[in-house]
Length: 236
Image (tube, rainbow, N blue to C red; front, side, top):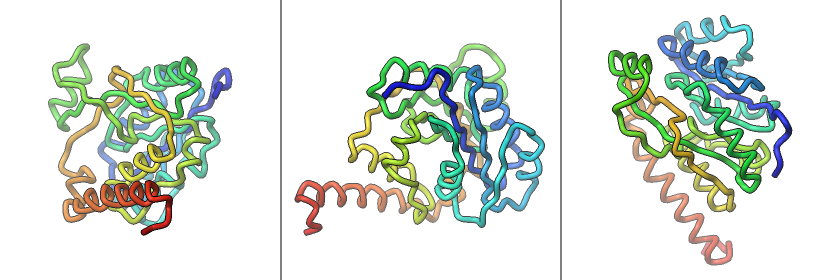
């Protein structure tokens, strides 16, 4: 599928009580070397200054919703998106300046691709984060990142898969990616660093520790769906 000459990327930032980091996340989107962007912040009923901080960026579209989780917030942002391409950025993470440019170029080179991922560097909040991002080069290992924060996807491809499931407290992207794979969406993972992921005590996976069994349920649902499909969709 051929891209428009300068396709708009709609950047969706779901956020809940992240006043310490939201400004840095927004800035990493707004300062991209790729300029054709729409930035949407979806506040999931934060009780701190998160929404106030987000409103301080004139270029950002801010919306609020009743507390329903990251999946529902991503869905709300996707419904508001105007862009030909969609990108998702968690409010405590950060993109390198050329993240979107590299991925748009990859989609332009490969019209067969529906989505592009990249590598992740995980850093602990505080000194490690500040020192590693401030200086050129890196010492932390990069990991292939098949996660929402590295993904750039054609909006029509996202719509083909459908929304993130909202019944999961964690693991909603695993479920979504499984459905995308089942539908035969084509993807590639660039070897480039495309996301700094911040590790801290209020990460969703830590806060929702009691919901970690959702990961197993998501994987089981994916395997069950594939078994049914292999049997011809009769559900037996």
